[in-house]
Image (cartoon, rainbow, N blue to C red; front, top):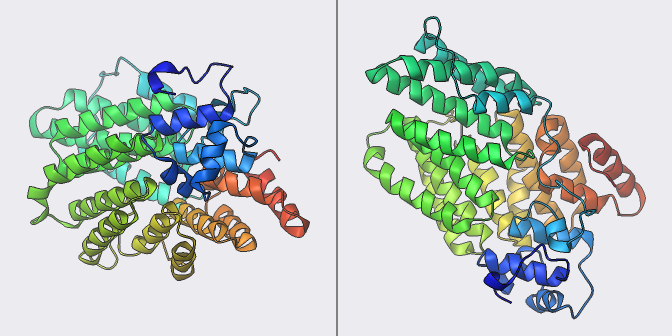
Length: 410
């Protein structure tokens, strides 16, 4: 079977053939995919050839996650299969944010907003995001007007003031990507990614540019385009390198965050040693920052490096290392509600990988307390809850209770 010969939507294809199609399209070997889902390559070979029965739903969700296939029906060819497992439902404010992004004409009547005031609003939006358990609801209320005003400023101001306005508009787009991510609106996400990059480049602000690339790398990786994620990351590091030696903490933090993204991508494609080398480089940057420094876009800081270590270990599918990192960093004092919620989900993935099911569920319950909207929109968390809801006894009962709260049907 070759990509050019196959229509993955064809009803005659088996589940195994569809899995093989997506694996080859992602440029992934059987050994890598099998390792990512905790199986043996010979098992995956038998699945792809139809020599054994189709994988059960938990295994299918693992495979869909590893291949970054957002709809399980694309693997099984059945539209009744669970949908949107990795995206979550659309937020009630999604339509308003979409309208602000899609608006063609920007109102230009009246004076543009003061750039100092616009800067204060962008900074306040970041603070509000980090402080709020339901950060999408907070951002959904702020973004439409902030986007319109930032576009107005970028249209009216000239010269250096225009470049400053463009950097602030890029900041508004960065916030928007956090709102849109993992919602059923891939077209809007990519529109925001592209506008963020173009606006940041035009602003000539290295921090705006680094932040836009950091978000673009995540979007490429989430779409399963690991080559684009890696090349985009490396190109940005090369472009920023001449500026870093004399940079302040904000740009150095963004530089470190891009090193971690390279680690994350390497771990996702099974390059464990490469991933840890990138992580070590990121950690060196983190240790050069002031002890209490916390970059608002990427959360890059000394305190977040333990959380990043958990993620690299989990993505590398190393059970012992994942549980070791989880034990060491589960209680990391991350000063951001949504980022702490995300970290706890990664810790839960480590416990689940190590077979510690009760610990995995307890950690997800803590994640729900820290940031309910983070867990509601996180596919990894939903997958774990779905698996635990099939366990016997009190584990099943407690998992089903959490499933009800985060909107997972069991």
